[in-house]
Structure formats: structure tokens, C-alpha cells
Image (cartoon, rainbow, N blue to C red):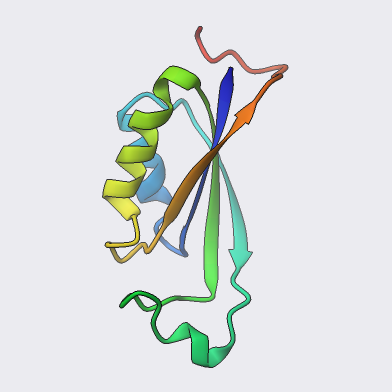
Length: 103
């Protein structure tokens, strides 16, 4: 089974995410610009971290065996405790066409 890793980080941190992911085996990803929906007063702080409305959504297709290493590298490089203030999660992908994940 394959995995779709989804990372959402503050704008400007997407390349940091991809560098970290490639460093542990990711072959590439897709970056989509996004915007948060929090109101102005909600943007101030969340769990002690300033939130920014403009986000980057990074999609990385990986094998099941590479998933944890990629997610950990992303968390360490741009997780909630960093300026990237990112979150990362994965979803199972049961069918893929046109991509060779090397397995």
C-alpha cells in the first residue's frame, strides 16, 4: 500500500519541507498554495504559535516503508514547534498509475 503524505506549512517553508523529505528518500512532491480560514483575532496565537493565513500544502506520494521517515523529517524541519508551524499527516492510497515508487 502507498501513502499520500500531506504537509501544511506557513508560506515560504515549502522548500524546507521538500529538502527534508528528499533527504530521507522522497522523490518529489506537489506544492499547492492555500489560505487559512481563521478570523483575525484567531490568527494571533494557537498553542503559543503565531498562525499565518497563507499556507503551502505539500503532497508527497510515498511507499508505506518510507512514510514514517519522511513524516519525521518534515516535522523536524517545519513542524508546529518551528517557524514553519506545519502539520503533517498521511492517508492510504490503494491504487496508483503512472508513478514508480521503486518497490
